[in-house]
Image 1: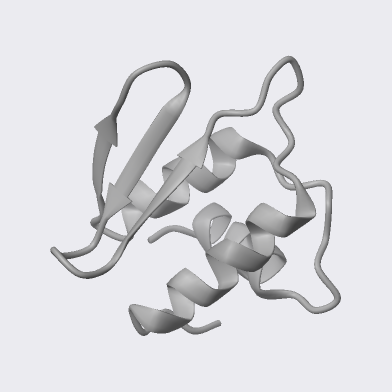
Image 2 (image 1 turned 60 degrees about the vertical axis):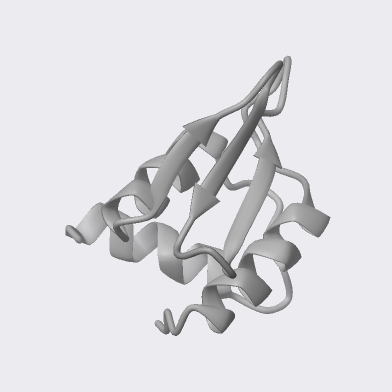
Length: 85
């Protein structure tokens, strides 16, 4: 994980939740964390840690910023798989 990934992770785990996080940055971070990326139909993408721990996100459009409730879901998911600041 490089410095850019660390900065994105810090933004993701910040409370109160930030709303200016780009989906592409989150995508790159989750791949850097060795999560398997599985593209589904439409704009759905699943990131799989193991059989029990995965998260499915919808790629936002037309903007690239993820919604705050998605950031909260990501915080819980990252906590469950043991990712910390």
